[in-house]
Length: 379
Length: 233
Ligand SMILES: Nc1ncnc2c1ncn2[C@@H]1O[C@H](COP(=O)(O)OP(=O)(O)O)[C@@H](O)[C@H]1O
Ligand SMILES: [Mg+2]
Image 1 (cartoon, rainbow over the protein chains, first blue to last red):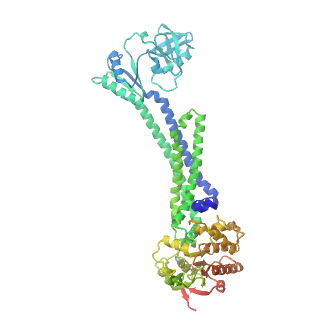
Image 2: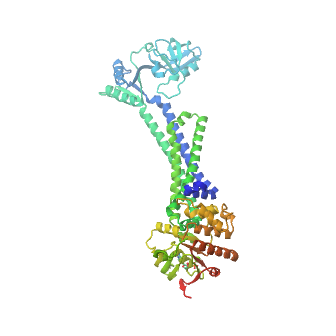
Image 3: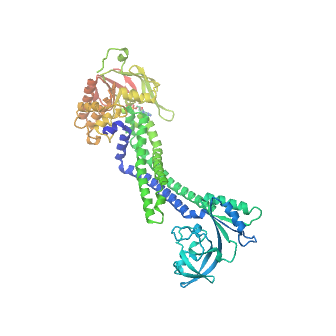
């Protein structure tokens, strides 16, 4: 009890008492370890999954696709429609008019069916991550990764689309994220190669999901005021739905983990109840020799809380390690686990574990400290 | 050491019972009278033996003297001051400041060393009672057992630690409930000698309760309780 004992008598007495029943204290702390571990792993995994999925689907939410409304006479969008979309998207993103058709693509390596797009600004749609997609597309064909692979195409190869020959000017890199266009199985031609003058769709690549929502509303307002001319398709609401789903999933996982922590609290309650009923006489002596009820209470609460502190710390560390290991062994990206905001999960779980232990110890400690010493001493 | 004869307050006995009765409900509407109209006082430096058969109310009397229990009627005076109406906190403080307890089963904390057990009543107080505790342990012959835990001590040694603990706070009165009850006769005798000697040195009053008459040889005075009533004679 040396120096500490004199400065922190409650802490010193509590640690001594815990060391008396190591196995029992260990089991009680183990409950907290498991509970905190569950909260940390499920919480972190849920967060990381949600972040990774949002990242994966992110490109989707930024796109607004305007196409002729079903049931309207128009087969395609004309220049006026395009102008309206351009005004709606002004300052909020890039507008890419697109001609679309399906077609058979032939090459020396065989034939395949592909989505054929006509646009002069492929970068806006297919990105330029690899630096090989030209900003303006005037001649030749850009082919998607799957098409290139099926037909063994390289830049410089020749393909035939609907009877016309084109030189492959570049091959799109394989696309990781999900997109309403399917670049992997696409062939992108200059728009002049299409016989029609109208556009089958106008894609707006918005700067953000909020911009996409605003553009979609604005286009709808401008073009569909009198009659349903165009259909405006945006995945932002789907993304919202997905985000909601992840929130729900996370909430559910955390609730399950939380229940295991509450169970741990019950086991602390149980252990403290056992402890104080075994030590009734000792507690009676403490009271008899002039130690106040609140000082006894404090000592016992420190005892319970220590179980939570040790169990919570171990559980939090193990949980973080487990999630990091999981991330390195699976598709789950590590960066999504190591986001600074995720530190709140182990910290919060630790705090919750300590709180649960404290609450679990409250009633037993109170009962023991408030018992009249005569009765405690009678045994 | 105390000067006994200066102020009127000092003249009052450190602990006194005035017409104290204690009744317990014994279920079924019945009543057990554990103490009946007891008048009792102990003086500084005096050792009083309370004897009586089992169930005669000795422990009840000691608990009331020790402010651990309250009488059903009558009053308890601590240094001439009535204790009725004290809060639990004040009674706890009064116990720590004025009283020492020795129990039949020692009641040492098993996780603490002898020295720490003796220091225990002062654990939550500012200041350091280590020197006082060591001094007391040396005086009861345990100078070489300071760092031993109770399971490393014999029954007699445990009771000596308990006596040192009861005196660490420089009490006015030491209350001992069957202090020899768990010891063989020889060890019991040496414990009583120890209590007598050290409380004389400290000028502490002693109320020692036993159901045998061993203690009467060491007491200044013996009081007999039968069915909660003090016998004259
Ligand atoms: N808490 C209690 N409830 C009911 N009866 C009690 C209680 N404490 C003591 N008694 C009764 O009071 C009487 C005196 O008991 P006690 O003071 O313990 O006697 P002693 O210490 O002399 O053996 C006994 O009849 C006992 O049964
Ligand atoms: Mg008794």
